[in-house]
Amino acid sequence: MSERGQPAFAPVADATGNWVDRHAPLRTRPYLRLMRADRPIGAWLLLLPCWWSTAIAAIAADAHWPDPVLLVLFAVGAFVMRGAGCTWNDIIDRDLDAQVARTRSRPLPSGQVTAVQAFVFAVALSLVGLAVLLQFNWFAIGTGIASLVIVAFYPFAKRVTFWPQFVLGLAFSWGALMGWAAVFGRLDLPAFILYAGSILWVIGYDTIYAHQDREDDALIGIRSTARLFGLETKTALTILYAGAVALISISATFSGGGLVAFAGVLAFAMHLAWQIRKIDVNDSALCLDLFRSNRDAGLLLFAGLALDVIAGSPGALLSPAQ
Image (tube, rainbow, N blue to C red):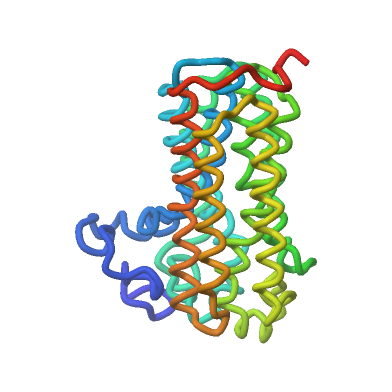
């Protein structure tokens, strides 16, 4: 038994039946759950803006395809840094998580690991992330390091603002800057526009996610856009997602994207519209499914951008040198 009465290495209530529960060695399970290896959706959502940015930069650079080395480095980096960020978040939120039904069985509030053990684990993951980051150019390295300020602040945002999803958007969209920086060694207007569009997308999908905990959050004083928007969530999502699609379209246009790229944007937009039509904020299981479906939406967009690179797009309307 753990120090709080939880069976040692017991599964997390909202993530059961996964490969960690079935196959991972017992002593590794709390750490794998801390880094959310049992639910990789967050790593996908952190990764996708990196891949979008790499593809859009490849369009602007008239490359033959998105750099596969960059795509792999971003995949590894997103996995380990998402794990480090989640572990840090759980350290800060461990007392709050103990008060929420969905999260009280997580490794820290249930006593399966201590805060010190979790902190050491977060540092170890961060060092792996640093090793990946050092493979990029110096400008991209500096850009990546700058994101740590936002990551460190995020767990505190829900205590002081109804817009913690905006702070999450700043962090989870950082890859929209990183891909461009890794290709060109600087940042240009298309990257900033893509970043803004990705932020709106993140606010939208994390609002859907936060509706799972809306009632518990209200009881313990945690703020979120789910509580802020309430029954007007469909309207808010319409505005947020429309803005995301518009900004991403502008970024693709300024980078010289062709018809294939905009087919990807259209598929992305149609998926987001489906989410808005489908959502019922009082159905927690549906909210979780819709949140997870954003991986598919993001992959549709990346497929369009990447295929546009391969197909060959016209010269950029705004060249990287401008």
